[in-house]
Amino acid sequence: MRTIVTVALNTFRESVREKILAVALLFGVILMGSSVFLSPLAVGAKQKIVMDVGLAAISIIGVLVAVFLGSTLVHKEVDRRAIYLVLTRPVSRTAYLVGKLAGVVAAVALVFAVMTAVLAGTVALGAGAVRPAVFASVYLSLLETMVICSVVMLFSTFTTPVLTSFFTLCIFAAGSMSGDLKVFASKFGGAGMKGVAGVFYCLLPNLRVFNIRHEAVHDLPFRATDILLATLYAAVYSAVIIFFACLIFRRREFK
Amino acid sequence: MHVLKVDGVKKRFRSDMSLARREVLHGVSLHAREGEVLGFLGPNGAGKTTTIKVILGLIRADSGRVTIFDHPAGDPRGMARVGFLPETPYFHPHLSLDEFLAFCGALSGMSRSDLPRRIAKVVDTVDLTAHRGKRLKTFSKGMLQRAGLAQAILHDPDLLILDEPFSGLDPVGRKMVRDVLVDLKKRGKTIFFSSHILPDMEALCDRICIIREGTIVKCIGLDELMRLGEGKVEVTARGWRARMLPGIEEYVESKRETGVDAFLVVRERRFVRRVIEHLYAEGAEILEVAGERSSLEDLFMREISRPGPRTGDKKNEDTLVFTGF
Image (cartoon, rainbow over all chains, first blue to last red; front, side):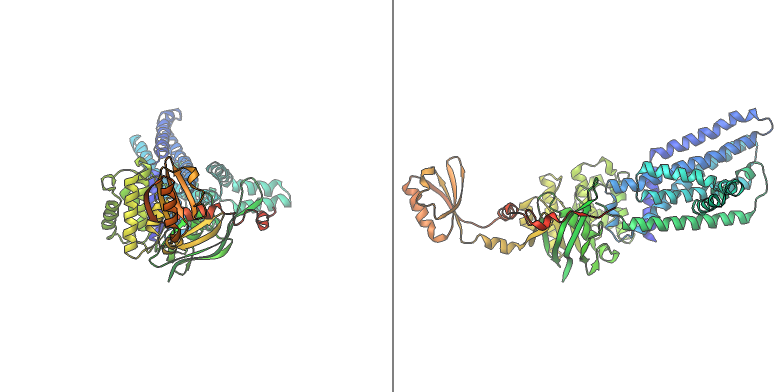
């Protein structure tokens, strides 16, 4: 456990010293700030616009940061052989990979915390109140990013950063629509199409379960059990993905 | 007790653009006993670094067996007692030296209370105390090599595996590394290191293994190496002319010439007098007569100038094995 924490802390430290993290944060803050100027266009829905743009910015920036950090950190260590100094100590490859994932998730969580604080500040400045649903939505976005981080880790164990980023963003896009895919297949497709859609539905992460932005923005009720189930889903899906990542990473040779 | 045992390790690599796999280690076997300093010598591309990576579990052997303290290669129980310095080390550039060593110490399972004291000690040993707070990305090549040695000895390992530890160091740095290794040897640590710097190897090692084309061609103790040249005598003559050679040719094993001086290695002691008298008679001046001993350089050059262990061997052609799709 100490090994995982040590690797995670080092990864976190490395991540927060990356310039890209500051740039992403700045971009997110600018995006949220711009919503303040756009909101007068929607009469009577100023706070909703601010929250909608803010929550979307948090989710998208979080995913982009996760993809960038996850795809480069492992590859960089392998490519520059810094990994030799870790794996020639009493450190299992599984512990290394789990530590890396934990470090990247921690760095993304920091981005989420800063951006949520900015969002709350922006809403408060407009004399609005941040409802608990907003925090629940941010929490679910963080879980979504954790799932994406584990997918990034899986690809980064055997391919290049560019391909890792490409594959992960494809999975993010497909995962965001996996529910629609199943519905579409059941309405318009034949038996074969339904089967294929079913397989994709099971394999791809169902990222819809992490999206309650609509409820948060429009102050609609949401169920605590949904949050709990989404947490469980994220944990199990990430664990399975990391299990396969570890299987690949354990077989990998460092020439 | 054998701290490190490598038995019959074979390794094949697939080249990037082909399906063929080329064998780079052909049944490498060697061992290091407790408290021994074992040198690993070979020309570039002989398989030194590949062997070291197999030992450390960074790559898997296709066949054969590696044990460190009786544990398989890469087993955390064995690795806890190993310190490793890679060739041209690259460390996490975002860390300061202190942060880097704390990271390495934690990974090696050192207690938090021991770390600050050990870090201060090893940083002092490698003479980097003034640079403790600096980020590694600001370090020169020589400083990185020193930092690499510091992380290798930080957890006081029983076995040190060093890949070219003198690489990138100035004479002061080389002496520092040599002193550290001598101190570790005195403390009974086992050291296995590869190097191209033969005088350092000769000065430090108890035994030396020479690898060539992925095959160990010689493992020899330093005492045995010294005995190889016993009985020979080197005569240094000034005013040497080529015409002086007839008459003593049969007694002289080899000769080197530098301008007016010649260094003649006389095959046996009993011929020395005849050689000296002949040279005097021919008008040469005798500057020195000294007992000759075989140097590591002689042995190394002899071993690598022999027909290769695999070259020309029909079996070698079979090492290109197509593994299919």
